[in-house]
Image 1 (cartoon, rainbow, N blue to C red):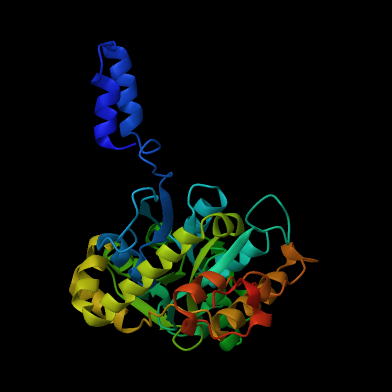
Image 2: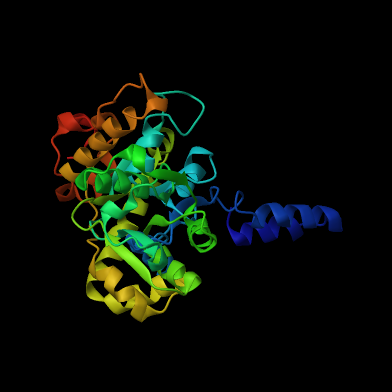
Length: 362
């Protein structure tokens, strides 16, 4: 209904509406529903540097660029980790989430909800970042940990179900550590500094930018054992099968927002650092080295497929997951949306994707 028509409805002719009726009708006409807007669409992200395209797209208005009047507004909400962001998606509090391959695999295998293995309604829409330099093992120097061998008999903080957990498994395997000799302590990333300071932990596996806050909080010499080249992290964009089927227009708008953000990251790296600093509360100069270690590219490629498959096999090896079936990653890789937006970014063959050839726009 056009604005002029609304005025004639309220004030045309001789009938005078009561003040209460005018107020109610006005509220209805100015509400998002009456204006044709759908509910707000939410993207759950985190402060990790890999999520820079999400903050850039949000702060630059790229998710809502050229938004039709009857389309939903897309908003971004920040969380402490990809595991927490994924929990928002699984709990119905978000429509999209970004997470590393470890929590993603947990979600896809049905471990994070009450519905059991193989029941997950999640799909992977693409990878937005790749890094093999963002995770570290840190230890206060007072504990005398100088190498991986010094971890025998120590308490190591790891946030179970996150990329740091899988990173530890790769690190310990590379250094041939006996798992029975190291006590892993499930610790939220926000509690690692306190655990190290109080002595409940002697080392911790942490990721950027939390390492900066941890160093400040401890205010003592720190030994850093890098995981460089041992573990590569994909940062994945996820949604539900239902949302993707019902709102393909919104999914494609989100993907275009990410493509615009990555163009801006390439063209204006200093602007990206400014957005990162605003999202994390850190100084831009501290974050420059983190940005140099990242590869931001929207893709659905072999790296996503192989990393997910490796994660599935690792999770199935946990004693508590005994008997859990290892699914095929291809069940969860949804390519239709990305192919419609930028077909050259999908480099996997159709038989390794949920998409069927007839679903792809010519």
